[in-house]
Image (cartoon, rainbow, N blue to C red; front, top):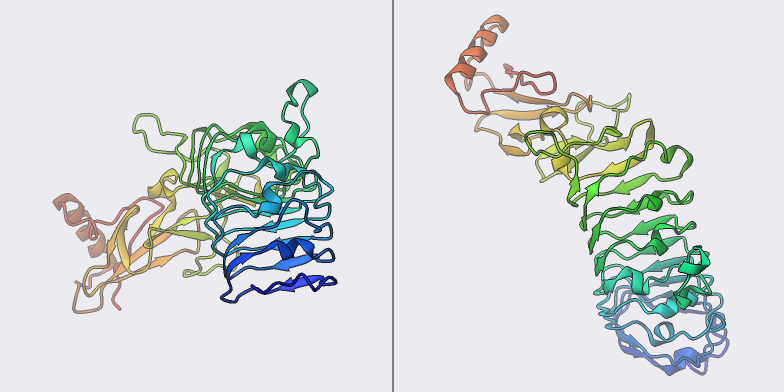
Length: 386
């Protein structure tokens, strides 16, 4: 990257989506009029700017999708809110940063978006999380939060190696709109205060080790903005007495099928394992809030159905038998229908009454499961003469 220190009046540096290599040198810190730096999509390995930089006009710093192995020095060694008074967006996702979160980030009083996803950050969140919060004075022992990130709205820390529990600093934050902690090593119960924020719109906690009962949000959400809640792939509690199978809590229900949905419309469903559908989930009486859970939390026999080209009972769906046609009717999320049919000449064509009798005989004789179709209200099969 060439030395641009002579460009004293440069306001926008846009060198994204190239094949630039090496490091951004000290000259970057001399660009006193720079307000936006777009460095993403290169092969940069470092940004070496001393603490005595002149970047007081910087608003956006985006160095995502590079090969950075450490936090840019001018961010990691921040000494005062006066150093970067206007910085509102930091995007460093998809790098190779192997570090903990520097406490100095807590001094960025204008920060609106912090995206550090898809790196190798590690350690507990409570020691270094750059989030300020209001707490009683006797608890306010972390001086790093004294300036406060009171404007922070979007925090993306997914796909890293963070461990420990969700700290009170984060759970009590009142300005966050999007919080993504998915794909880490976090554990413990979800603090109830995590859902109290009036501004929280999307919360992603998938693929961690959170446990305990799922919080009941029915009394919280009506006055909140939460619309997307991803909790899948965590060992939350909730079992059917006796058999140990996970169970949806009473306040999570399948999304109702839209009035215009047809048999092949998958917009109200989620596809699992590439071969079966389960309806999307929402909070009861608050249909605008979508909830993502692991498929094991569904009552498979009630809500889920093998997809087109497969037959059987979710989660155990098998390829359609030879010469058969396996389709699905998804027009009703409460009663999705699996359809197994054979063309004429490959399967006996019988009258309806005879078909019922033959079905009873197959059930009694222990025929293969793809011929012994379930008879409950949520799954049925039709034998049709194509």
